[in-house]
Length: 120
Image 1 (tube, rainbow, N blue to C red):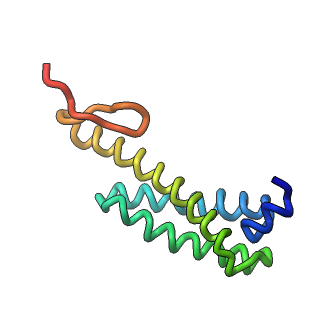
Image 2 (image 1 turned 180 degrees about the horizontal axis):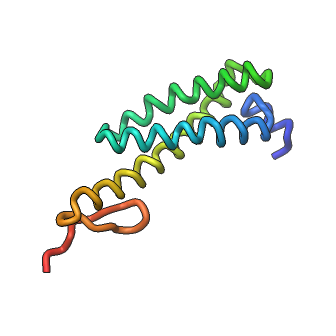
């Protein structure tokens, strides 16, 4: 994919996407996923908050780097990236939380999972 093709799809350049979407908004997505998990919120709320984060991300790209504000494909790409980041942070935090808070009932099962502890 050439730089022109990427700019056509995302509405901005690759370095701007990396800086704003991955680093800035991505770190906000990590904090969002962790906060939702730590406060025992349901996982579907990640979608709502990532929609808002993607809007803020699109606005920052528009205001700071003259990117397209109304780029549906760019918004969809930003939303998908932020949803993956927030979802991973939510799952990792929830797995750690379940094992720490209920050590008699659950044990780790892989990197981001838990299972019921087997009685011996």
